[in-house]
Image (cartoon, rainbow over all chains, first blue to last red):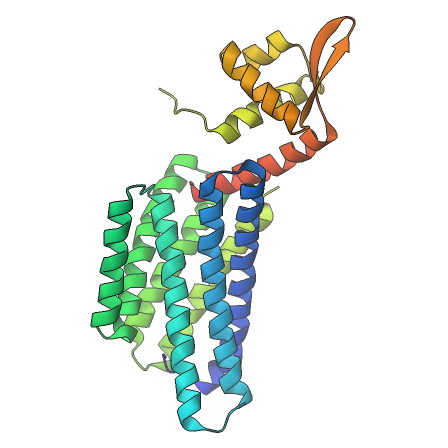
Length: 208
Length: 90
């Protein structure tokens, strides 16, 4: 797990709670759309944000566990931190990946299977902590490109907010890759990430 | 050339057309405003009636379609979904 500076622990928990609430609200709206229209794309959209929401739940709980010092056994603490990080990473990748499949309208099951196998192989064979950020960055770049095209086409404030949000997420992944063990850069990356979710929240509140 | 409308957009166009006429519309006007063939409009009308979103009425011996309260609620939710769909481009 990325080394979270102690002074940033509580702030990061607040960040993850904000992001969790926003992702959850979007997932709920997507599910409501699915119940209303019965089109599978809304269900996939809802599931994508549900995965993202779960990633923040896991991360916030793991940080909370460390912050509250609930266990004194260092081996168990390390195991929980590692498990929390892996779950967080997998949920985030699953959410972004589903969004990429949905936005780029990839319907060929063979292509989806090849992409899934490629990501799984990269995560299994290469150093997880490094490759996870790279995989997320690639997916975030694809999403940012799609949302940029969408905002050029729609020219609405909401589409601009969504593009801004995913651009912020992409930048935060770049910062996380270059941050290494730099605590300030780590905090900056997380702050930019939560700013992205705040942009999504503004878009959400604007839906009449 | 404009893109093919989704089912959601067609349903929204039908309900919007009825609302624009004050909540009640003649079948011919609905056909014109929804921009559908007679056969497809019939299918959509049957589905919307089945879901209780619109209802058939007799006004001065003429068949009319009215949007129901459930239909108005659907329309409000539809607009929200449409905004979400536009914002995310899905």
